[in-house]
Length: 380
Image (cartoon, rainbow, N blue to C red; front, side):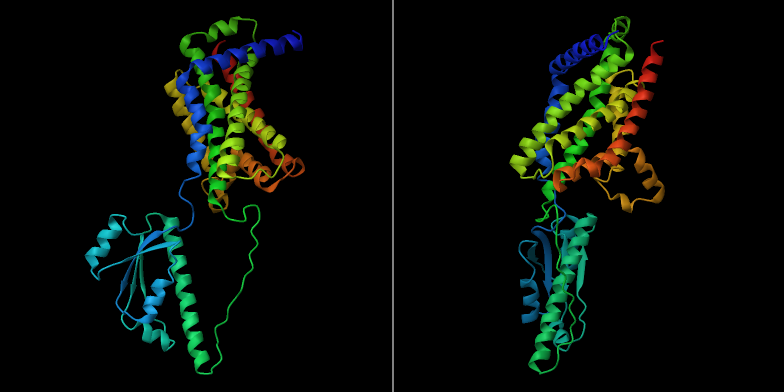
């Protein structure tokens, strides 16, 4: 068979897949959602910083210094709520989630601080959200340290004594995201997650659909090889993922959210195509274990969740146990995340990315070899 005829047959089957996807309104709606509204919703996800976090304050001292401390709780980060000095009120507010923390200023706070002693304040933090609890504690401790330094320093200066409060001044330089905009990270992370889901689910669903309708046998007795069948479905769904990614990056992320595009668009979308084909091998493999759409959905979830968890988008790979870090090498999304962030936000070129691209490609070859082997074996 000539290469031209071989490609013509594959392209004809790809056209069939596009038409079937268009007629499957549920799956088509899912594809449109994950590349548009889902990405936009991710930009408004909770950020990893404090914004108007409700904190209760019990002022038992009622002094000028205690009022100064309350005044220094910035309105941008904290929403200060005065509380009655009652344990039940505090407990109820924390249990209901009305407050994220409660700061209690004790009697004699001002006198202890002016005598350069160390007054003990109580800060009760709702740590059901660990990140938020850590940030609230850190912000409050930094404000208290600044206040005590200012007051002790002013007292020493008034007495003509040297101020013995050493300070370490840092000059941070933030690259790639100077404003620390969480939406940039959130939207790109969501895009990579949804691309992974689509690349595995769509080819798997297309192959299982043929099983459910009993048309896979008709395809196999046609002048098409099993490799042509799976390649046509994978390439058709890859083109859908590329189109969806173009809309997500060019319209949703760049125009609506303001995520910059520093690197080369050609390199970025070439890497998406490579990742889509790599992950499609997993979709083909998943379809060989499923007999209907319900089963393939469960299998895809079982595949997608470990891949995402090991990729570093939801948790730091460096914080994982050693045995889990060793498994990261078998997740194709691990390499894709580094490359996508490198191109989009850092402007990395192929010279810096090709080792990861090569490793991801080798994984894809292994997935495809196993998937096509099992697909052929099922119908012998």
